[in-house]
Image 1: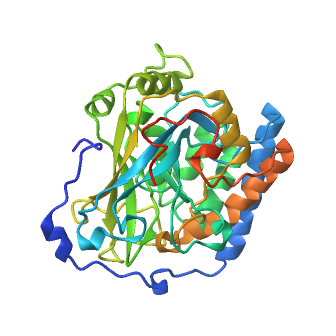
Image 2: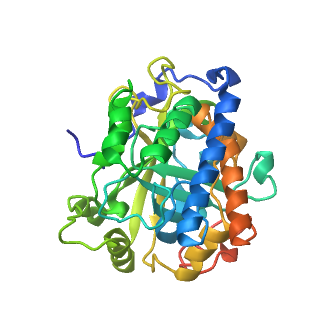
Length: 378
């Protein structure tokens, strides 16, 4: 098997492929989806209330554990081929960005030695273009990733079923597995417990779901590309040797001593039967549909666990893919679910913590020092 952090290279032949152009018909909304989404929103709020009862502080229903936060910049090249000059990437330039590393479950106290998907989120500043109403007054683009290429919460119906099982049997793994093994998507649902538990700064991240990509439709990923990041991927967490916060400690040590770099790659839609938009549980085969680099994320050396920044992000910010450009519209059932669930989750969290949601417009409004290499970008 190829190293999952391997780099896909652009090729001139990729310019001439038959990419499917975006149009609203790429989405097919199933019956009863709205009811399923409302049920999921209720379940996520129930999870938040349970965590509040345990910690006396409210967190998001997922990605509750912060592993680190960093500031950097997105660098877009001027010489992209025409089919990649889409949306945010139409012109070369640099954009300030704040990023959060996380563990995916809804428990902020989750032991780092437990293998689970890890997340990565970006809030990109100085973005220009037509925005969705939810974020039209804020020139930012929100982007989120997960370390598993396929999404187990693959559509609204699946999400309702799986979260219901996790709420009922999450503390009884044998019983949970009994129910998961009765499903047709057993392998997808159990995959989260067998992920490689390694350095989060060295872990490849995926959009999992499809998005509009200007004239086209795509999924995207983030590939750690520095030599140090690639080398650290070889090291894994050892439960009998490491502490329960090892991932945050590894991350803090890395960012204090090294610059980081990631390739932001896109995988374009060519065959909607083989590359479903509505069902995010199927991985689009990269051998058939290659990843193509459109930009780089550059993160200079810094402290990745600033307490003030952590509190500000958790108590006041939210990342929502519906806050951003219409030309990067989230697509498919999981993203229509997010459009409802994310505001519901955020509203409950702000209410229980007595904290206001803040929509920052510039990176200078975010606590913590700004590395000199990112503050002048436009």
